[in-house]
Length: 323
Image (cartoon, rainbow, N blue to C red; front, top):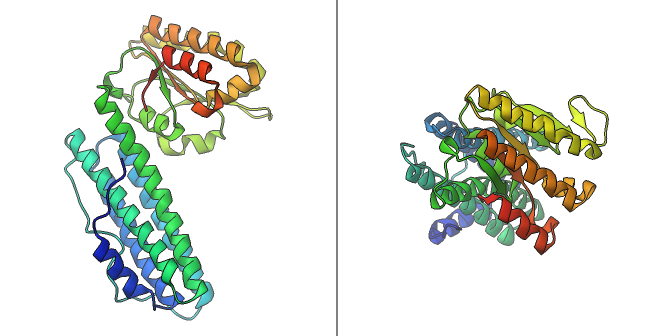
């Protein structure tokens, strides 16, 4: 779902107020807007109880702060003896909205609002770029639009995941044992964040472990990096088949403690490319059956376009597609 932007008059008003501004004034305007956005997302993070949404809002706040710092450094580079000042123009962000975060509907409403706000800002900057009086202002406006687009996409993925979970009556807190498939890696990570904190977790990943672990904060996760480089806690792709017994043992041992473990496999398409689809899917089905046997969970991310139609049909027949 893409929220409709009904604030056309407000958007035009912002553009009209900014179109004749100098690059210095536009920079100042953007700096103060990013400051306010960082504060707003930080406040939302304080109020949100759902771990994944809290992590999202903290990330948005940090990115807004980084955007502000980047814009400020640019300002000081161009105007070393000056400081940004408030610009007489309407805010590119709509009025703050603070739900109570007591039920799913509160999260949906908050995310819808944030998507609307980011999309409004993006479209405003794009419109400004199309009517700007000079090339510097046009270039800066397009850079700002790209920043807002990144925020919009990250929030939209969380929104789609929460709506999908609600429609399919799935909850990370009360998940049935078995295998689950995500067609977007970020959505899979959001889902992992919302598993009960006592759930033991092993992640078999395709990106640098430090990058993967950034959004998991203090949660303890064992990470195995599938890579052709030599690194700690890594295996080469051809060694992946030998890993399946270790992962099944992990699920079995977790069940003995009554905590029930989860195994996450990131980017199944890469494993299939290296091993061949049949070998990859044999491992996948083995691990799904281990999860069923021991009350645990297999969570997989995979891009549909990386597979032939018949291959994808088999994957989706064995795993529950979440989002």
